[in-house]
Image 1: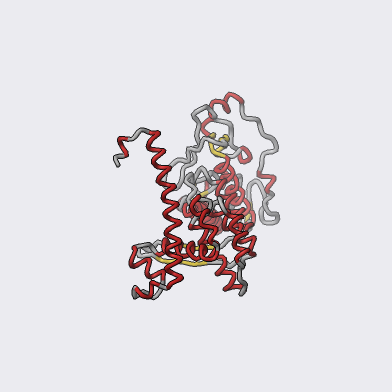
Image 2: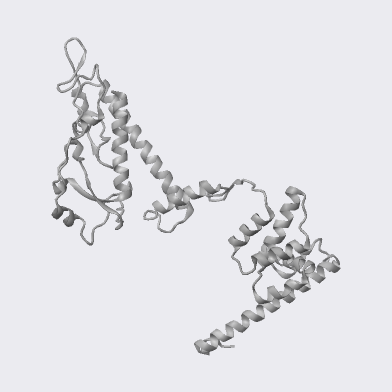
Length: 363
C-alpha cells in the first residue's frame, strides 16, 4: 500500500483500522501465549522458561516479553478481560502493573490477591494513565513503601541515581523547580539539581571568601591592604579591593595608637560591637517615576551575569536594583542602577546581609 497516495481522510481511516486490527492481534497473541504456557510447550522447544522462549525464538525484548507473559497469565485467570485488551481500555503495561503488585504483596506481606480482587482492580484502573494506575494499586492494596537509593556508574563515568522521596520532600523540590524555571526551562531533573547545587556552592564560597578577607584586614596594617587580592563584597558578583570594600560598607578602617589599642575615627570598636541599624540610612528618597519607566521599558531584561559570562535575560518579575545600596550611601544615579529579576535581586540582597552579619560577628 502506498500511503503517500492516500488523502488525509483516507490515511486517518486506514490508521484507525490498523490500530483496531493491532489490538485484535494483541488479544490473539496473549491467548496463544496463555495456551502455550498452560501446555508447557516451551519445554519441548528446549527452553527452560516461557520468557526464554519468547526472547530467543521470537526476538521480543525482555520488557516486551514480560508484559505479554503477564497479560497472558492475567487472561488465564480472567478470560473475560480479553475484550478490554481488544478495546484498548486495558493495556499490557497495566496488566504488568497488576501482576507485579500481586507478586510484591505476596513477597512482602505473604498475602494473595483473589481473582475477584483482581477483577475489581482492573475495573478501577481501566482507561487510566500509568501514574494513575500505580497510585490506585498502591492505595487499594496498601503496598509497602520501600525507600530506594541506588547508584549505577556507566562507562563514561556518568551516574544513574534511583531515589525515593516522601510527599513533603517532593513538594519542596517541586516548589524549588518552579522558582528556578527561568534558569532551567527544560525542567530536566538532572539540570534542576545541578543548578541548585551550583547556587549553594557559590553562596557558601562567597561568604567564606568575604569572612577570610575581612579577617586578613583585621590582622594586617592598613598600608598592606592595597596588595591584597580583591574580595567579593557589597555588589552581587562584583569585586572591590578590601579598602574600597570597607568604605562601601561604611566600616571605617582601623588603626592603632601609640599604646597599641585599636581606635577608630568615627567609632570605638574596642568596647562596642557594630550596630547593624546604625549602618543604614534613616530615610530613603523614592526612585523617580521617569527613571523607573526608563529602566523598565518593554524590552528590559535581567542584567545579572553568571560566572560563565552568560546573561540571565529573564523578562518576568523585573525590579530595579541599586548596585551600591541606598542604605550604604548609594544614589539614584543611572550608573548605580541595574535591572534584575526578582530571584537575582533577592539573592544579591541576601549575600550582602550574610556578609554584614559575618563581619559583625568578627568585630
